[in-house]
Length: 437
Image 1 (cartoon, rainbow, N blue to C red):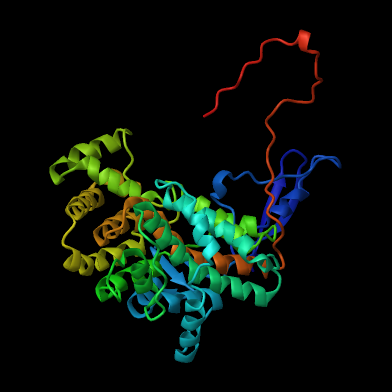
Image 2 (image 1 turned 180 degrees about the horizontal axis):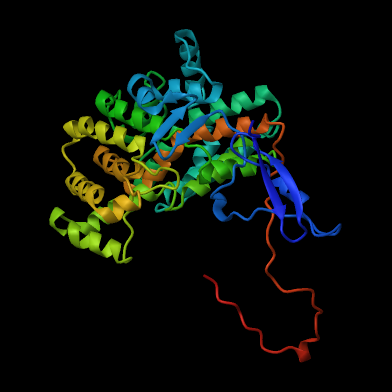
């Protein structure tokens, strides 16, 4: 009977070791057995950007990139997007099961209770420049909440954790909406607790002089679906940041602010804004072949195609493409959609892209829908952060409750100078500054 193990021989010493395999992985610490002598530290693994390193065990999100599968707690993303609301899915991600009706009612009430911001937090927002980027405002304000709720530092207390989770989920749409209103010079709109999670966000964004904001139900449902699709995505850059910062037992507001900072980069949460810029550069359908030629020549990247994990069609992109039809019935068809559809058609038939498994990802269509709904491109990453907060918090709590986890502290391979002595100033030559990439 075959063993769940791998046999390795250190050719330097001829020492043989049998390393156990569990869940398709070996423990990196087991490689420390391979030494050339008693003073040798032992072997490490070298894995830039964590291309093939599992940093945790997680029961939250399952992805099979080769088959294009995404599941939250075992439920296919397609079924959740079709049959559930965002707060139902948030409950599932955090607690492991979909809520029954009484549980959902209580959960919605608990989240709604925490939508308001302290008035001093509003003043903090007012201190930003008129042209401050909404993502910088969001991350800074979330971090500032750490000072508003100092008890949040007691992260090992389950009751304290539960309260902060509800506060963050409730307040993220409010902060996000206020960053948008700030950029326009509009007065802030208080939450309306009679509205659903998505509709209330729309109210805080777009209410003007009307006594009661009435969100378009089709657009509110589309936004809810987009929130579901972005709620969690396994160990991505921002989730890794949340876990790494949280591993020091920093409070959840500061940890979430760190995750927001990671999300703000154009290679992560800002990718859908880059898609819109690309579509603007292309300009019209007849210019797509020339643009694709330039992509093949290495002059441009095909934004919104390809993914670190998915080597098949991103399942979230299919759902967004489907939701787009209902949105455009209300808003009118976005001219960029025709360019995007033709670009997708050509790319999926071109051997260059097929061979490289460059399929549309979630960013390819989400920006077009957000723009059609009235959001400015600089708000796209903020819209991403609202639902992803749920995933960050679930991953953070899972990490804190995992007995194997310690403070994150990767190793390095030192490539600098060997030991040397400081020489007097008059004996030093002119220093040369190494070029930085």
